[in-house]
Image (cartoon, rainbow, N blue to C red):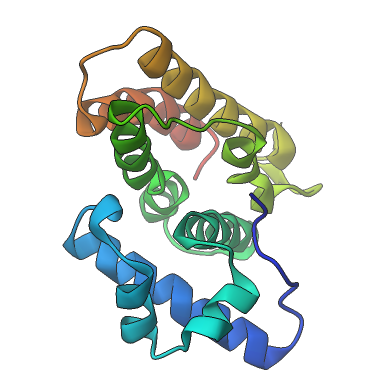
Length: 180
């Protein structure tokens, strides 16, 4: 799964992607990720089906793209630390819920796409003057993958929300230390 099918250099392309990202984010706040259909995203964004599939292969690809863009925006974000930290790891619960659905139906998919979720933060900028951004990205994505792997391999009965609490307990102190 790639972050998106085409680069977003053209303003019209970026506007379409932003509409789709916002539509998905709004729907995720209203209902579980797995119950969201591409049609609902299209209706909310007021975007045609062929336009959607020109940009993204499916709603999972849209989700990865939205997370990638969100993390990339963190580099120049001047939002207060607590809000930035929350936005940086806000992707975790919808993904845990999505994977839980696939885990229960025997269709769990893992791979490089999880690590790709955080790649938008890479760069030479240092966080809090001493932690390179790239290290922070690797830490967050590795921690996410570690928690996810543990959950799947141990067949833990933790709910996605409980698992998200575990991830947050590991990630938030590091973000606080980094001043994010």
